[in-house]
Image (tube, rainbow, N blue to C red; front, side, top):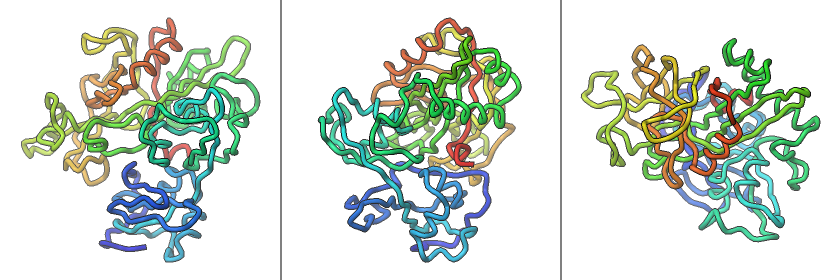
Length: 363
């Protein structure tokens, strides 16, 4: 590990992961080149608030695996900002007839952007039968897609996935979300993959998991997953280098610049209706707890100054664009994905959304 400074990262509740911080063997960036013939390691630079447990959770590996891949680690409870860690773990998948990147990503619990970045694909719309794709490791997945259940398949594997997200609702959600789930209503679990507001030239990325779970009258368990976004875009940042839209946010530290915000972890209630006078989506109906990027470094963590945390229910669920997330803190999806989401929700007039960080799945 190469330590650029000695800020200690231990048991902070915050974590930060940049998709641009990861690379595979042969790729280069300001973090260096991943070494080794197998290409089975990510290179990751430790950021403020990181712990080995949080980093392991984001990459779907164990703390022990990271320690083994980094012999310089003496104390797993003590890492430093600026350290470069080698993160092991990947699998490979051979494209079959009928595959699309979105289908492969959904079946392996990834996003299309994860696969595009891991394979240096020029276009996400062009893959060929027999093509071998590198898949970043997330769980114990096999090399054949048939071992992973389709979105609405039944059986023990699918039931286990339902139970995982039901546990998230019961552990981190509120009573209303638990009651909805018990009564057969669809409940949303949004799993946030921390991303800088400056990513993709401030256009944002759809790298979060929007998971809908419910039980039907027969007791069968259902899970549908969509790629979405829960972070604001740098296009709305006051004085930011990518700011091209109207300025959003609130100046919480009185430095003369509005600070972008996003929903903090928690449960939020939404009702179907017109959003921003342009879309049919789900509108927030109660005050929301918001965290702010007050230092404008693109991340939401303990380095930021936070205010009281309340806003006037201004962050909703609506479609973004195909190349931009169109979010100043709202939950957004690509237009076609959003249409599928709305079709799934059907006539359900309201929903509870339990928002958690991706590290909760590894807890």
